[in-house]
Image (cartoon, rainbow, N blue to C red; front, top):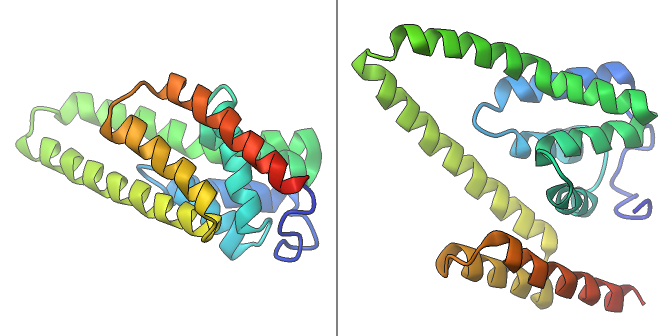
Amino acid sequence: MQDLDSSEASPEPPDLLNLFTGFLTISLIGFGGVLPWIRWLAVDRRKWMGPKEFSELLALCQFLPGGNIMNLAVIIGHRSRGPIGSVVSLTGLMVAPCTLVVGLGWLYTRYADYPGVADVLKGLGAAAAGLVIAMALRLLAGIGKEPVPLLFVAAGFVAVGLLRLPLVPTMLVLAPLSIAYSWTRVA
């Protein structure tokens, strides 16, 4: 993966302070979903990696156990500064949301009976859905105009989104096929 988009990545990896503050910042502004913000930080703003490499790392993180975003923070931190970079990135990503969730939980238990609270939560849900759609469109743009990868995307969407087939069996079919296709392209 080292040669992926190397011309677009920053020549100097971020230091520990940049990793921490970068992930802390996106955890504070990314309420409802930080994936678009991580992409913005790592690819667009600080150029720690190129768009293709980001998409491939995200795909890897989706197969690893645990949260995709946490896995992504760990991998980005590790690539930059080794094991300590992983810890610093993950800490930056998690410290603010954990504190915020505890505080919001306390507020919710105290004010849940007020009528406006449910309306606010519905609005936040709609905003989060918009962020997910925007991120999906940006990831599709990273694939380019190659027809076969787009067919895998379409097959996954039709199988899970429209036909309501279970995700795990769908991935167990599509993942090996897409990996085999990638290997034929490299060879």
